[in-house]
Amino acid sequence: MPLKTVKKDTADTLTLEWILHVKNYKLTLDKARCAGCQICSLACPKEAIKVEKQPKAQGEKAKKAKVDIDLAKCNFCGICDITCPYGAIKLTLNGSHDLSVLAKESYPELVRDIKVDTRQCPKECDDCAEACPLGLITVSKIGFGGKPVQNLTALTPSERSRVQINLAIQKEYCPTCRVCEYKCAPGAIKVRKFMEGKISIDQSKCPEGCTDCLDICPITGALFLSADGKVQVNELFCDYCGACKVVCPVDEALTLKRTRILHTPVHSGAWNKALERLTSPVDAVKELKATGSKKAREAVCKRFVFEEVIR
Image 1 (cartoon, rainbow, N blue to C red):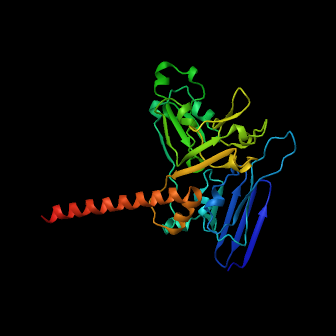
Image 2 (tube, rainbow, N blue to C red):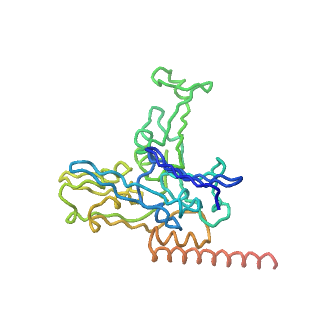
Image 3 (spheres, helix red, strand yellow):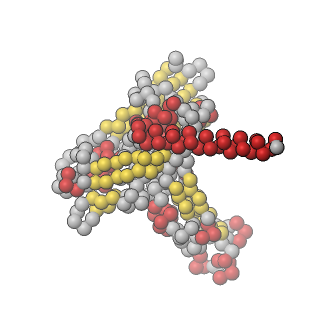
C-alpha cells in the first residue's frame, strides 16, 4: 500500500500519485491533448476512469467531455497510457516513463504504422505540417553544410537540388487519422490506421441545427457540415475515438463501431477483456480465432521444416 496518495486537478492537467518508500508512481492527463473520447475508460480494467459530458448554455458550441480518474480505484497499471489514441495520458515511475504491462507482455502495444519517404517530398512543400489537425508534423530543410534553409527562392538551382527534407512526426501522439497522407505528395507519407470501424449519422434523429459532434471532433475533415446544414461523415479521416459519440445528445443519432485494433502480438486476459469493450464480443472472438489459426499455421510450418531437416 502507498504511504501517501495525491490527486491534483488543474486547468491543464489531472495528476494522480502513489508515493511509496522507494517508488513514486505518477499518472498525468494532459487536458490539452485529451479529446474527451471513450477509449481510456473502456480499456481501464478497474473502471477507474469516467468520461462526463459537459453542460453548455444555449447558443454555445459543445465542449469536449471531461475525463476523471478515481484515485481509490486506479492501480497505476498504465493501460490507459498505452491505449490513448492521442498520447494524452502518461505513467511514470520515479520520473521515468514506465509501462510494466508491456515488459511483462500482459498487454499489447498499439501499432502506429507511419512510414515517411522524404524523397517524394517537393522541396517547397509544407502541406503535411499545415494539414495535421494536431500539429504533430515538423518539416525542416537542410542545405549544404548542414545549415537550415529558410528561403528556397534565395538559392541557386544547384543549391536547391542539394537541399534535404527532414520530416518529423510525433508518433506517440498520432491517432493515425491519415490526413497528412492525403494532403501530402503521393508516396511521401503512408499511414495505416490502428483502429478500424464504422461510423454513421442518422440525420432524421439529429436535433435541428445541432453540430455538437462536429464542434468537438479533434480531426479536421472527419466530420463536416454539408450545404444543407447537416453534419456528414468522412470515414477516410475518422479515427473512431468516440469523442463525438460521447457528446451526441441523442443516442440513436450517431452510431460508432470499432471492428479492429492494430497491435503487437500478445496472449493476455486483460487485453481480451479490453478488446471486447473497445470493439464488441463478436469482433473480439473473431480476432482470437484469427490469432489461433495463425499460430496453428505457424506450428504446422515449423513441423514441416523440422521434418525436412531430419530427412
